[in-house]
Amino acid sequence: MPSSSGPASRAPLLRTTWPSVVRTRCCWSRRTGLVVLGPPGDPKLESYRRNMGPDNVLDAVTLAQRFPGLRPRPTEVALWDGSGGVLLADRALRAVQDAFRRRGGTVRDGEKVLRIDPGAVITVTTTAGLYCAPRLIIAAGAWTNAVVAPLGLRLPLQPLRIDVCYWREKEPGSGGSVTPCFMATGLPYAPHGIYGLPALEYPGLVKVCYHHGSPTDPEERDRTPPGSPRPHVALLSNFISSYLPGLEPQPAVLESCLYTNTPDEDFILDRHPKYSNIIIGAGFSGHGFKLAPVVGQLLCELSLGEEPSHRMAPFAISRFPGVLRAAL
Image (tube, rainbow, N blue to C red):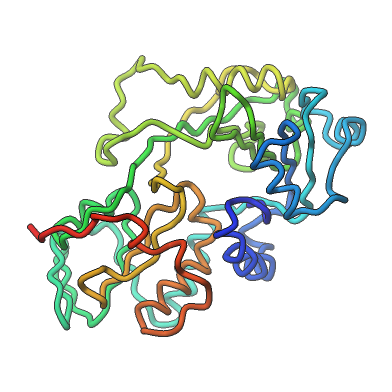
């Protein structure tokens, strides 16, 4: 979870979220630091450099001494952010849900939403029953358009199936000599960037992924026929061979996850254009989890009619014209 990642519109959100993570990081996060690699002049790299400051540039000798498993090209720049780290997702979710329950909340899992009836009192019908409330927050991920379409809304959301790859150390216990998180930007064959995390989830397996995927139906993401082409895995194998020679060049574990991207890869955090007591959070474009505390705060403020604690214009539905349609 790098403290400097993302476009300018998300930077204030990350600065708000990070202190809350630091206060509780002992149980569900790990500080590892972050290395950002890329060619000089790359727009994303230069944006990171401005956020990090000039003292955070690592020359080739220093990088090789500190992180010998990372082998960038001689012409590339390496930036260092010591505040970067990893959120342990399962532990983080349990911690948040436990805190929610302690404050009187109820978690209803495994229920499919069948219908939402808007009004002064909103009725939500699920496979388990009916729920009524004066306000509703919809945060349905890749299923958002299926949920909001009957409410006359069609958002420009594209679910993507992401290949999540774990690569085995050639020398067990070495971490492939890769201990920080890293991001590589400005690669001509990987325009959306590549990121990596240390061997924390599976012993001896380093997570390295491409920050993009293939369009998918979220209901079908786990039904990929055996032998289907996976061009992003081949792309990553090429990267591993060049930049991370301490790892085997073929993935040991291959999983999948879902991104839900907007055209500008910024979030949607806004009221329904017609039903102001329905709030929508969607389109997190692969960056939502690390910002969940502040996103939750903003969605709560919107639902209660309070002044949002951050500028909301970058996340408004109105930036996408023509999304409001007649309800089915």
